[in-house]
Structures are given as C-alpha cells and as structure tokens.
Amino acid sequence: MKIVYMGTPDFAVPPLEALVRSGYEVAAVVTQPDKPKGRGKTLMPTPVKEEAMKHDIPVYQPLKVRDPEFVEMLENIAPDIIVVAAFGQIIPKKILDMPKYGCINIHASLLPKYRGAAPIQQAVIDGEKESGVTIMRMGTGLDTGDMISKVVVPLDKEETGGSLFDKLAQAGASLLIETLPSIEDGTASYEVQPEESPTPYAAMINKKMGLMDFSKSAAELERLVRGLNPWPSAYTFLNGKTLKVWKSTVEKTANGGKTVPGTIIAVDKTGIHVACGEDVLVLCEVQLEGKKRMETDAFLRGYQVEVGTVLTDHKE
Image 1 (cartoon, rainbow, N blue to C red):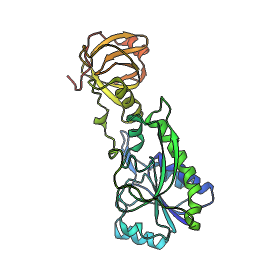
Image 2: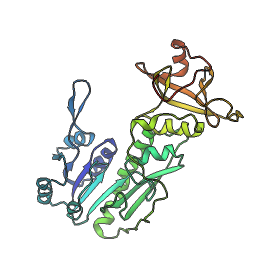
Image 3: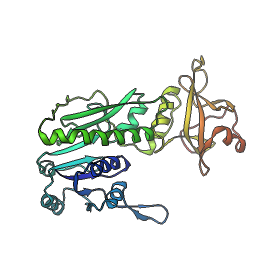
C-alpha cells in the first residue's frame, strides 16, 4: 500500500512515525513551506518535514496543492491512499479522487462535534468531559466526510490544550494503524455524518480569543486559561501591562455580583483573587509583560498588587 502523507505541525508527527514503524511504504510527505522564525528570521522546517528527513522520505512543500505541477507530480507517484493530519490547506477534488482508497483525514474530535481548525482547544474551553479522534474519508466539505473509525479520550480536570494535543496525537497514530488494514481489505464501514454538527464550528484560534472578560463566570475563564495553554494563552491587563494567566482555580462565593468584575478582592499566597460575573477566579501562575512565567506567590514578592485594582481589557 503506497502512502502519501500530508501534515504539518507536531500533532501530525506521531501518525507518520507509526506508519514508518509499522512498515508501510510512505512514498512522499507533503507539508507546508518552511517559515521564518525568531529574530534572525531563519527558515525553519515544519515538525513533519523534520520527521520525514529522519527516515529519508522525499518531502514536497507546495505553496498551493492545487498547482498543476504539484498535482502532476502526485499523479506520477500514484499513491494508493493519501493520509492527511492537520495539513493546513484545502485539498482539491482532483487530488481527493486520485488514490484508489481515496484520502483519509485524522481529525482531533469525535465528529460530527467540533468540525474545524481548533477542535482540541475548543473541547477544553467548552468543558467537555471527553474528546477523541475520528478517521474519516475526505470529501469537499470541511470535516463532513464519512466516518470510518473513532477513539474516545477522556479529559482530566486539569487538562490543557497542550496536554490534550499530545494525547490525541498519540491516539490518532494508534487509530490510523488499526484502521488502514480494514480500508485495504474492504471491510471498513463508512458512516455518513449528519449535516448539522451539535457544536459550533471550531474556528482557528487567534490571540484575541485569549482576552479575559471577567463579566463571565470564573468557571468559564478557568477553562479558557487551560484551553489556550500553551498558545496563545489567556491574558488581561494589570496597571496597563499585559498579564498572561497560565494557571487558575475557581473559588465559590456568595458575592452575588456586587463587586465590579475584574476587581482584585484579595492577594495572598494562593494567588490573586479576581471578582467575576459569577464566583472568584484565583490567578495561580502568571507572566507580566517582559517577565518570566512564575507562580503568583513568587511574582508577588517582586511586584506589588493592590487590592481594589481592576484588571482591564486594554492597555492604559
């Protein structure tokens, strides 16, 4: 079974590793172009490209996969199947129809829930008790293709976007190796997805999503902090400076909403206590603009935070 593998970030590395380890013929890897990183703007390869190079697999990095030259090159490779995991480009019908067994996608949610680019973070933000991975046959819609296999992954109480990302990448790798034989021998069953998803589309995460709105409940904000850890992180503004929040806890209160949301009502060893629309959010690990990330107890030794200060949604 000749495979072409399309993927880009860390999430897509374990499935590629698993294919190689299981003895599959990976004829080519397709990934996004190298990107400039750091102050020197050095071109850096994608994690998937780095993995492919370890195994001497040919790597292709088209700006657009629909370019005729790339499509022709793919036709010459003549893959039996194309495996896609967080590739980052929409794949045209001409490529979807090319392989004997079609194109399959490793999607990091239990479809039809959380179609879209950021299902992992969104599941944490929404307080889901479980997530998982679905392998589906790709069609022209966004994550709407027929489902072939699924694996459920429970979420821990302290699950972050980052920790769930790692769990689902490993789960996806195992599910891929379990699923491929049934696709090849024709025993795979293909389940049509309902048209409507029970959850909103999980749009791509951006930095603005991390801005904390203290009129929301402390429970919602605590989930936001976990969901956007490690990127782009939840944040607020303290005395005009950006304050990233890496870890927080909820403190139940009978406040009844009398204090203005965002007001610091207490400062102690456990953290900075902030009034919310409902209950209190305790900031336990923070990072002030230009400073290191640290536990709040350590942060307070070098920075005075006054009770009554209001955390804002903008720089002063």
